[in-house]
Image (tube, rainbow, N blue to C red; front, side, top):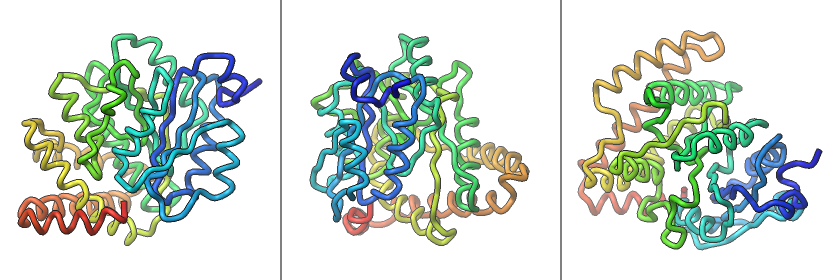
Amino acid sequence: MPSAADPDVQQANRLFASVIIAVYNDWAPLANCLQSLAAQTKAFSFEVIVVDDGSTHNAPASILEWMQKYRWKILRQPHLGPAAARNHGIRQSVGEILVFTDADCILEDHCFAALGACIAASPSCGYFQLCLAGVRSNLPGKAEDLRLIATQSFLLQPDGCIRYMNTAGFAVRRSCVDVETGLFDERALRAEDSLLLANLMRRNQLPFFVRAAAVRHPINLSVLGVLRRTVRSALLEAPTHAIISTLGIKVLMNHRERFGMLRSIWRISKTKSIGRAAFVLLVARQTLRLLTLTACRILPRRKREENVVGNLGQV
């Protein structure tokens, strides 16, 4: 049976979806991501657009082979950040549904089948959050899985929508997007999905949570590497949260919600396949993130801008 990624299937049917992946030097994990896209079963027809956000080295031959085999596109731009890269991909796309994932993510085989069924059953819904999960192969992976399970469960609303957005697994109807302007605010060097969520919340819109459409996010870093990346990410997120604060919308959890989330994380961490060590690492990660965001609010504006510029090359 031909795959939905097969170019002949794509040519015979109008493309239903465009999958957009922003890449900055993370070519190695992208191969696994592309393999998982090619393996989608009973899925809608789709194209894949990889946007190279000014990587310092070119895509290896193995990636180019994937792109050529399925006639997928690879675009290049200066290093402007993931928001600009995704908007570039949107402008070059043709699908009725725009799907976003990250280079280091792996989609479960039935992910698109589940997403397609949900989209068909929800004609009035424009935005869809896929179910994210970690890979419990190491302690950082267990902590990531714990974070995602707790976050998605805690922020899920009674109507099936979710007060959460993560472009590691996110879809939107093309009709909801101004293609020329783009979907993402390019001022955001990181946390552009949080800024988009804030704008949706202003319009009383939330993405619908598609639990059966699973995307896994492996973490192949040491504990120290994870903590360092947490601080770098928070430094880049801080200006975005400053923009969000001007909208009068609270995307970050308040103290009461954080306490409730902490209890939820503690409860889930008793699972043997996750464990209390993952709880400790996750609390350390979240504490570092909050401390960094708080420090960025206190630091003089000029110093914050120097930090952001210094970290842009590490996005």
